[in-house]
Length: 256
Figure 1 (tube, one colour):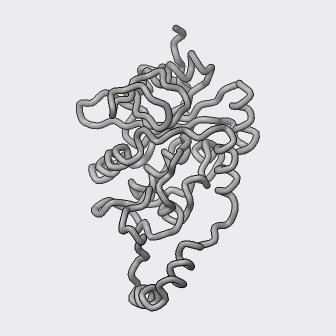
Figure 2 (figure 1 turned 60 degrees about the vertical axis):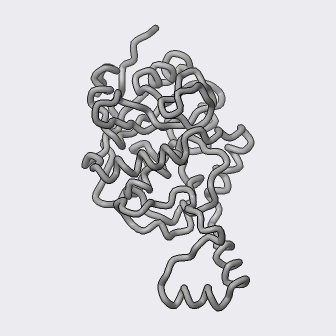
Figure 3 (figure 1 turned 90 degrees about the vertical axis):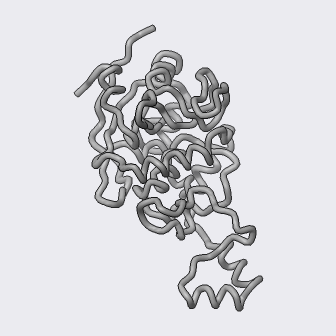
């Protein structure tokens, strides 16, 4: 099944996923490493009377970021149609749309906006950092921060554990991906998305952190566990709350 870009933009709703497949050496390397046919992922953000937007991360800065109004690298919010055209015509990518079912509700949309406010402008990692982060995401996590807290503050830590209260960071600051009060889904008490704020972020991490904030992914995984291949239909993303992503719909993109 294939549809035109205009049809795909018209159909897109908040939470829908766009996946891309390219032919360059870096694209092929990502596909080979992650054992999937795709190498980039972004998420649609469609709110009220705003134009459809694309929430993703990339190295380039060819488009104006709709959150800051500037041209920047890293985590960005772009006009959806323009972003897809850039990835197709400048980067030589094919594009597919996967629709989220059921549609995102008002609380999920609020969570998306909070995540955008928190992550927009986060730098894109270097090639070496990207490879290292992806590899580290597959190593079983040892909960050293919790162990350290128990050593440094044994009585307080034990008391909180016995009372069933969540762990707190020493500075009291919210961790990246921690779900703000009032959003849907499981508690963000797991170790995964509560890692210290990301200094850099790649595309799959951005979508995963946003999905967790929306209550669509379970807590307990680090953001770097995710790669673009997790978001294609050949993998099991493990969405929660009865949500699912539909099959890929190929998008025909006009040549410029």
